[in-house]
Image 1 (cartoon, rainbow, N blue to C red):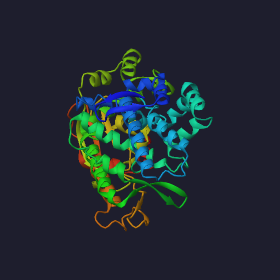
Image 2 (cartoon, rainbow, N blue to C red; image 1 turned 90 degrees about the horizontal axis):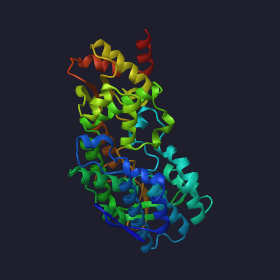
Image 3 (cartoon, rainbow, N blue to C red; image 1 turned 180 degrees about the horizontal axis):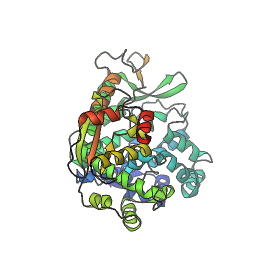
Image 4 (tube, rainbow, N blue to C red; image 1 turned 90 degrees about the vertical axis):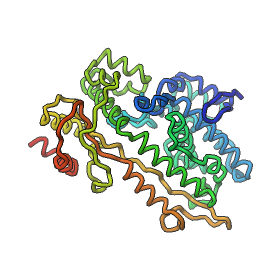
Length: 414
């Protein structure tokens, strides 16, 4: 075992197979991809990388599997399945773009699909096939995509996956905020394997529900105060627009984006597609809020085209900019991509051995699924950012964003 010192989990023991994967060029790139994208412009300590997070998730996978094994609940689950889970935990973010998730919001391929050729072809695939088995790369990908039939799938992708436990604690620690506190030990010690409708699966014992609540609260607070902080979202919107403009102009190839590091992409943009927007981002002259509205003030499906139709959003941005006397790219719309605050399709085992699914109808103290939805709508805000102060009428913006996608298209072509 190699021992790597980690600021969050202290000693992380890495087995020889995992160490070979860590030493691969694809994994080493993660040293230069920031975990929180452009959040360091708001929280200066948020310069930690996907590399650290991947090692932390691997560490938690080792801990979780050890605890489950000690309690005897892994009986009947092949050792090979456990090895595959550890590798999936290590490699789950290997396909991330520079500055993390932002480029997925402009229509770039999801990072999990970017990871597919990195895991199923080349050096990593050769290592996995030689050390574990011929189908291991595909099994690892299935776990990462949440498509595996493994009883341990939920450790990699699910309500209480180990990815969340590491990034929430790590992000809060590195940002210097008190919001990401999770009772990780309690959660790990509450994991079990139960018999589900399709066979054995990861669940949680009933006394771990309070720790699950801590996970929900932590995720809400981190989204509200860090991930979706208005200045972080302003920097993210600027970055998305300048990369999208460079791709549309042919200065950047969308197929090569995932090969860049953070600084590598910015240097390439400066060489191939210099722009006032790039200069403003590098000098931290962030756009300011001209309008904002919480999702709770909108109808459930309103403005979703801003989050999932980047081409239409750019056209609307430029049309609004012209109305206000601004240049193209000097007004940006932002509505974070819809995400679950906490998916709660989770089996819970009572003390008497009875198993039930966690839903609003069978949780006596707090309705966690309903609370998760309320938290989500509270944390998510629709914003308009501009390079300089402008007068933007609230009614004008609301009338526009609450129109359907087709209505907005018609208005632009009228």
